[in-house]
Amino acid sequence: MMLLLLISFIGMSAGSLMLLNLSPHTFALELAKLMLHMPTRKHTLAKQIRAVQNPKKLKGWQATVQEAKAILEQTGQSHRIGFLLVGSLTSSLAGAILAIMMGNLWLLPVLAGGSALLPFWGVLFAATFYKKRLHSELETALSVITTSYLRSENILAAVEENLPYLNPPVADVFQAFLAESKLIHANLKLALQKLKGRINDSVFQEWCDALVACQEDRTLKSTLMPIVAKLSDMRVVSAELDYVLYEPLKEFLTMAFLLVGNIPLLYFLNRDWFHALTATTPGQIVLALCTLTLFVSFAAVIRLTRPLEYKR
Image (spheres, rainbow, N blue to C red):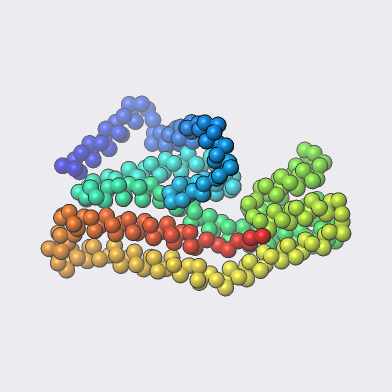
């Protein structure tokens, strides 16, 4: 009966899209735009002042959502936030439908809530590899540009000389800096300040601050190479700790495979145990608790496998 209702819902949804002459891609695009520009609740002035004076640290799912949005904005993909919200809604509906098809109402809120966070966890996990690639490219770019700058004492000539050897995403940032300095205005300090805000990395921002200081006092250029050396130190330490960082992920995948794999294994070993696990209320509660444990553990693993960052 539940399967028939699900098929009826899918057919009704498809028929509605056909009557409105909308393709699924167009519908998803419009829904993403709507969710992206959805008005937020306005707080009173007193609440805004208290929030500034005593900021509360976000925890749980709110911190995950906010961090995923911040990563997309920092990487220049803020237009994808709407699609991320649509993906979260779709995943939540898919999790709820799966729980209903299994006939486990205890599992319904767990699967719906956990599945809704999967797209945000995916962004956080992908950001780990993006940051490692960014640190590697920054190390190369800042090293060659700093070497050229120490020789010529001209940052524009140093960037232009080494730009063909840079790779994305660092190459795009320095290309924009070069175009702004040559075609828009001649205020080099302002261009360096904008360059500082294009990459969210503490070492890179410190390097930009040192460059700004060098425009007033050329003798300060000796401070640039020690700053660049911090990226090399981070790479060495990260290579030594890679195994330790990814050990929680390996353990989680192993335990998750054993936990999930035991359920179909029970079907072949003992049908009565499988029936007790999937058709009785205590068994369904156990399944819901196990699924909740998997989601909580996965969220913790995502936070433990982040790349090392230099903190001043």
